Length: 202
Image (cartoon, rainbow, N blue to C red; front, side, top):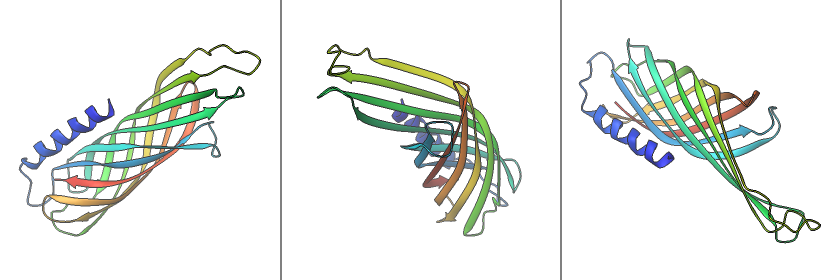
């Protein structure tokens, strides 16, 4: 699913290149890149797992400094956890998707090299956790454990920003984007932090 979504965003990015731009400021901005999310495992600022994935966004600038932004990200984590019985283990696959929209503040002038920005986004997050057991549940209970597959959707947001460096009239390098990415899933608020980098197309 993540590869399909990322491919779709690349098609949008290529289409955006053909859009006419104002001489005063850029009207369309499409971003795609790598993202790493430190996902809160327990609803506190202590236990975290590293999720790797992608982050894409499309921004329509309504003025020189204000844009309306749609942001999509997907992050993934795989772990193998040994259990009590010899040779038994749990393979744990997790994914977290964010579907967000909001406002971006940035100097969108056609000129200039360094382009810092900030954004405030809100929307939904979807998480899935799939567990696959191998071996016995425990040494004293030598029977297979039942596999499980749990998913849920809840509120999410992103508050942060970053820095773009202009390469030419069409391309910027997003050297960093950093966000506080809280989610409210299964009645638990989780305090996640994501960071990434990539390419911006105008």
